[in-house]
Length: 169
Image: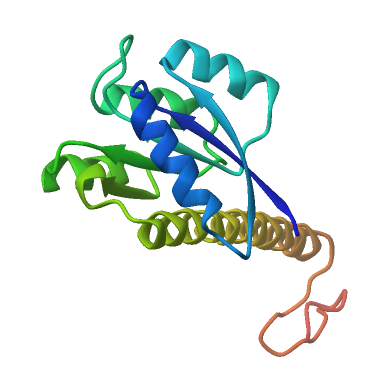
């Protein structure tokens, strides 16, 4: 079984315990949970470890609101961030996703099932996103190579004929 490294950025100890308990209920996965109570301590951990996902409370002692999430997303854009908030605000949830969060969960309605689902889906979405970026990069490279070949060899891409020195195909 593969270990999934999760960073939980939360300043309420009871919430951290509940999250750990919910993650331990998974029979299919093993989670290695790292904890940070402030944004500053989270950033230190992010600089030392690779995380598969970040569970992030928006209101911390040293940072509040969507700025908290943006700081994390800007530093590790390749790591999915799931926002955990005690504020049930649809506008903030939509903005969080717009700014790079993979999901937004209201702590009031948190359950083992929706936490695990949000984490798994977020990790998979991030993998797909990275694969698409790689494919787009490969496609861009292929187009540049085709353009280079077109400049080197007078080739008609429609009819697949080469233009001769007499300017005929």
